[in-house]
Image (cartoon, rainbow, N blue to C red; front, side, top):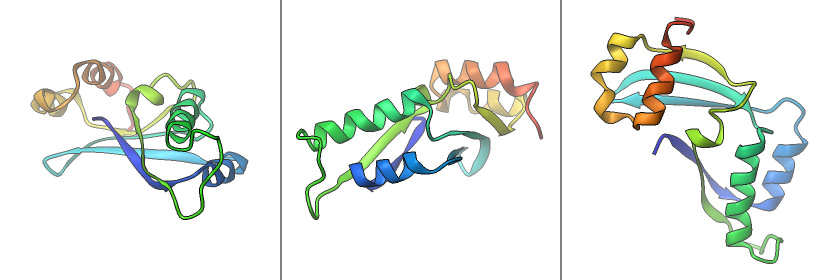
Length: 122
């Protein structure tokens, strides 16, 4: 998976995060200890929020938190933020480096990385 998780997530925490004015998420990707990318996107990205809400609703079907219970691993992947109009590339390795790790990266995501490597800050 190209993504990450939040541990012990709840509706209360989601609402707190949504109330933040300029909350951004930073996602970094490593293969064999080599940094390949760092992305930044707004927490309030629609597909990102929808994904979190779906997982919370599955864990808490009545739409309310249950005391002392949590969604242990609220996961997300590149598919939940990659189309954000406000996605920023903070760092992206150049194409020769990416090529060396191609077999370790999901094909669709790899194509996105290669396409954007030339315009990335270093």
